Length: 115
Length: 200
Image (cartoon, rainbow over all chains, first blue to last red; front, side):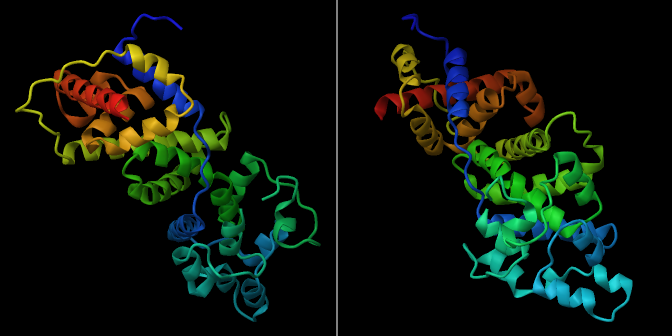
């Protein structure tokens, strides 16, 4: 290493480069994932309904027990685009508790705490 | 999630095997407003966006949650423009950078700049010993601690100039000050940083 003192700009640029290169990827809290997901879904709904639950299933995604029940209810097609999470306690727990005490399958708020 | 698992297997071991979607496929599914794809979109990219935003907000990481949400909402608003020329992560980090710079701009207009008028510039600290210190193993932790201990205006301007690599004139235009004023602020920030580095 050179003994010549670095100019300030060079010193700070190098320091920034070193700290960036060595920075770890920090896990986003499940609570933040949950809030971000909820906000995204709300925003998506502003420009029209969500994808029909049956379409979501056909795309290879599992539905949670509540969504499956809803999918098979004798309701009109528009109702099948309903965001079941909006009235589910899993969403509330997911957004508020770290980690949330929720465990059933195919619930995004459960997946957020696992990954 | 185990990267070798499929998305259905992640939550249901005997589910049909559905391969992980590419960035482009995931974007198409999110654009269709598939709620599960939207959850996967958040899950897949939240860590990198969060880490980046958090690093750039030191010491005020309490703003990180709001900014991360803003990044994903802005991504949704612009998702139709995603062409796959870069990875989805790179594209999202580009949005995150804009959000962070918006935050710098806002905060630098709001926070008080310490001793801007009354005190003369501090004596410069010889950077010779700091040069060697950059190579130290604890440089990252030490840098974060010092940034966290600086007045907010100082940490903001250092991060903006050196970590976001913006020129003095770009910063000056953004916050409506002269280049000279930004240079003065930056000089004070650098000197205080170096002084703290020596003290630790």
